[in-house]
Image (tube, rainbow, N blue to C red; front, side, top):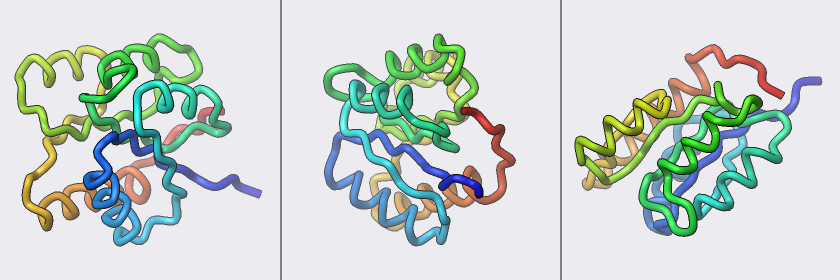
Length: 139
């Protein structure tokens, strides 16, 4: 029996979390949505997950451990280094974009400010990563 696929959403802003979860559910994906509200929770969740999530949607500006350090830790760990990570952030700083890709982000998406565009962007991410992309099976 196949285990339930999960998506890990790492978001500290309650409004953005609600919008993202709503968009993920509207995308009609069957994956369970796990939430981490800071970098420490994100790392604890992913390092204890079995199986790993099919994708992590990661904000950069997080309390406790920032998103770039979360990404750095994931890529440094043999078990999690291939986990797909999509950066979803309000930052359009060139240095954040460059560093995210240098650290191995699979995608970098700037959060649209407008509600409809935000939900469409997250819905498209969900459709791609949970429906179109062929994940590797990581234990």
